[in-house]
Amino acid sequence: MSTNQFDKKSEAWSALFSEPMSDLVKRYTASVFFDKRLWLADITGSLAHAEMLSAQKIIGAQDLADIQRGMAQIRSEIEAGSFEWKLDLEDVHLNIEARLTQLVGDAGKRLHTGRSRNDQVATDVRLWLRGEIDLITNLLVELQTALVDVAEKNVEVILPGFTHLQVAQPVSFAHHLLAYVEMFARDAERLADVRRRTNRLPLGSAALAGTTYPLDRERVAVSLGMVDDQGVAQVCQNSLDGVSDRDFAIEFTAAASLCMVHISRFSEELILWMSQNFGFVKIADRFTTGSSIMPQKKNPDVPELARGKTGRVVGHLMGLITLMKGQPLAYNKDNQEDKEPLFDTVDTLKDTLRIFAEMVGGQLNPATGAKEGGITVNAVAMEEAAKKGYATATDLADYLVKKGLPFRDAHETVAHAVKAATSHACDLSELPLTVLQGFNASIEKDVYECLSLRGSLNARNTLGGTAPAQVLTQIARHRARLA
Image (tube, rainbow, N blue to C red; front, side, top):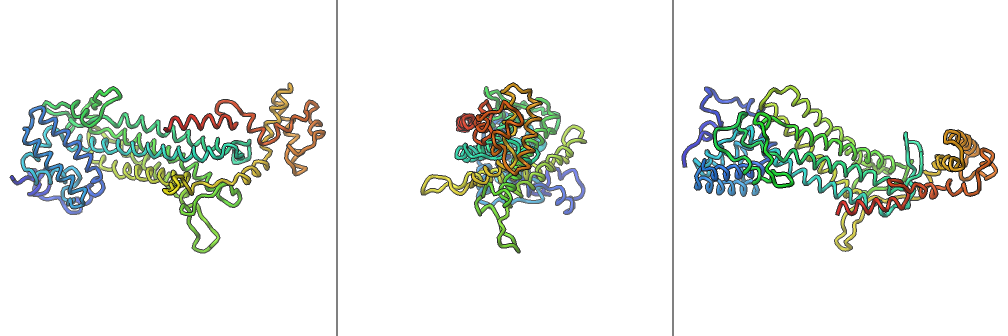
């Protein structure tokens, strides 16, 4: 086996320089201790590149066999935890290439023919992110399913619907939860769209201008699964853009930020609902913590942390946008700074989705096959709260409109009725018929049906409405979609 450049000075460009890199600069510029998570993508991309080089007669069949053998050993070493990651080799790519050359000699050196670390890293990040998007999409399905499960058990439970955090109209608690299912469904749609643009091959762009070797880039793309729905290879069409584009990372982080915003909104509601002033729901003790000084406390730490971590993910989005805004074409070392925020965004989103799916839906009990320990709903507290804010006032206005009164006049009439109910400290439904008729003579005994919480709920039986019949239709739709 021949000695290679890495054995001499541990740098891919060592022959040009008259002095070694300082230790301070090595630590400052190295990325291996965070980008080593790209190792599988790096090996996968390299094997596809090597197979194409062999098919194009750029390297020999024996070189390909040696590369495949060496990469198999490197994979085993990494999986076993015995691979030695070296700071001197700067990043995941040079570490793997150096070990490959150590194992198989000149064949390892030939692997880099027709490519640069610029297009190599761009390919690796895309491959890695594609896999993470698939995992996150599955986690979004789990969370949506957990929400639908809870919704199905609470279709008839009445919750005060709020606007401006004031009691507005009664809604089904299930209907409220399904609003979040819609949000997370859109998040999954956005991620699918991001995945489509992520799944394009930069490899073969080389450093910035392409290469003189007769590469078959489409072959590599197909080998790596970088194809559209019809199986057509998806290849970056401009070498300058191929090595320097990080739109896909920004798009992903934007989609992740919006998903975290949805989680944060849900967290805020859980925090309110769990407080003694609301008392609408409980979550399992394993998702709460106690106080160091107040023994009666159960603090909603998981929703609070998710609310806080949302700011962290949004911050990563701002960081990536700022990273790219001043870069001239093509690749710049600035782009090394794309990985830590991207990696942390992925980790944070995955962890948050995983814990929320369990917090909402509970854990599977192997003995019973049922999920246990999810959200516990206090239906009585919800309904009592709905009675406190004249939640059926709009129903009375609608009743008067159906009697022939213009809506604006009906609105004014109901305002007087609410004022009277407030002065008597009672609900609209508790006002005597004679009192109600004093506001408008067309009011009859049937008004009490529309003034009841249940009547109000059932009356909103249009597509997207909160009537239990509509909610059950939506639950069936989501079940079919998530199956």
